Image (cartoon, rainbow, N blue to C red; front, side, top):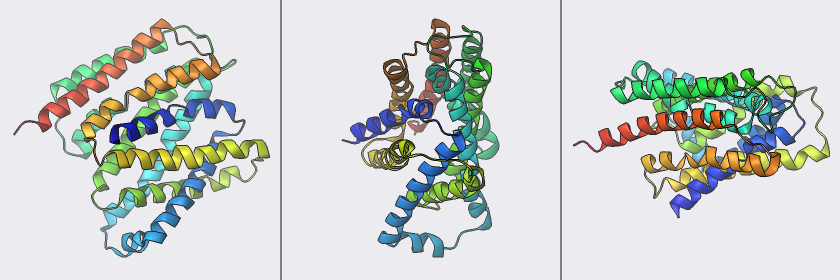
Length: 292
């Protein structure tokens, strides 16, 4: 059952690019409203359980609080770059370049988490760099690509979103033991809504936008994370990470069905190298964790 929950969450997230393309709203609004909806739902859940008071009254050092407040900043950077990539290149390019995140985590972990950089990480760095080069040097107008868009800027934004996501992973990992997961996500969403509020005051939201925003807020930002976290009750973290590679596959299939996007062979080759690089890092971590 845990595997089904994690795969369901990943498949939900794989549809994000289609929603971004379909909704004619600025990226800031597409991030603000779902974050606000999800944050309010999570706040009510925490409040009803009494967990909110426990999280607030528990003493925390200043560094942990600063890191907690840094998480929404990383999330905003990751999301806006990712959304920009969705609008300016194919879904495949956006998602595959975003999956450079595990490689960036491996590079930054020695500096922020005091983790050793192993030889497999260097192989992964080389493979992901070659993969990104393939994607950048693919056809300038892939079939299904957004018309009038800047293909290169979208691809670069996808890779930068991977970098921002790596920072997000590292910050969350550094305080995961000090706060509950639901509290971290709630603070993230509410802070994101507060940060983006000045940028959406002049944005006009019509009734036709409401179903999309509710779906993003309830399904993508609340139910999917909940299913993903619940899946960890019976699924090991390493297994969940391997299942994570179903997301880019799902995203490419969904883009083909709803947007008629067909990624080029060069993009698929580059994406395969990026995914392989992430798998090598994951495999190395699994091997080290099994060493007595």
